[in-house]
Image 1 (spheres, protein in one colour):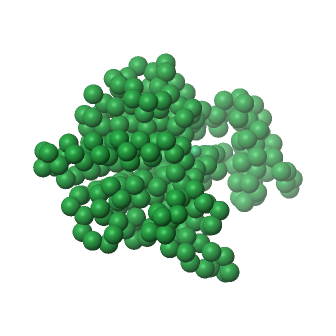
Image 2: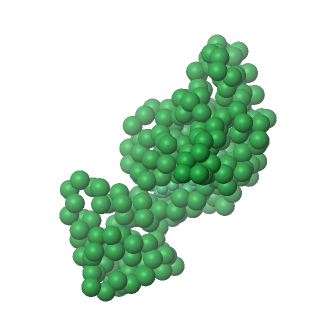
Length: 284
Ligand SMILES: C[S@@+](CC[C@H](N)C(=O)[O-])C[C@H]1O[C@@H](n2cnc3c(N)ncnc32)[C@H](O)[C@@H]1O
């Protein structure tokens, strides 16, 4: 058997694979991604001892459980993330959006706050959000908060979701967490001589991690007060982005806010949002 660092992938196989992936989860594997796909496929092929990409693709397609397809998507999706990534979003949330939302809700006797981290990867984004939410609603001190706060965190990759649920991060990864928040919400533990920081029960209690393909039906009703969908749409083409932005709009409450990644402005997309700041949009 030939084992290569990169999978041998013909143009025909690449087209078949990219069509499959696009139809399933909207990820747009254009021609420029061929080398990346080759590298990532090689590992899957090695694990399963497949000689050709066609053998591997046939195997994925013939698995009735869908588990092999999940592994393929795991291998092809890009999961780069960090705590408090694109910090200005968290600053806006803390200083502008939450004070406004909480004051409006208080006035109306509504104590419910709902948020969604769509494409949450290994959990750094929702845990960062949960820290800000707990600080704003007085739920971080161990006492009972007057607010009913819930954060939905979803991703298509089961591998990253497992990490997110575990909520354990090495020292390097938590460097972006302000020390006051780190001391309060992340507990240092030693495992095999290495220090890990574990998300506190208060953080975990706020978040529901769920497997969700954004291209499929969303089995919840909303409405959300804000949605973070950052550095996800960048992998989709314009028609897919257009549809997704429309669906986010429908799932937000009036006055609710959509945050997109820094390279994902809604330019070129028809939508009903009002621009607030770059990559921050409010539903009127
Ligand atoms: C680069 S990460 C972004 C993580 C985080 N939002 C951030 O900005 O740091 C993109 C995530 O989107 C997820 N993703 C890609 N396509 C998806 C889809 N169709 N449905 C749900 N999640 C998807 C990937 O699995 C990956 O974890």
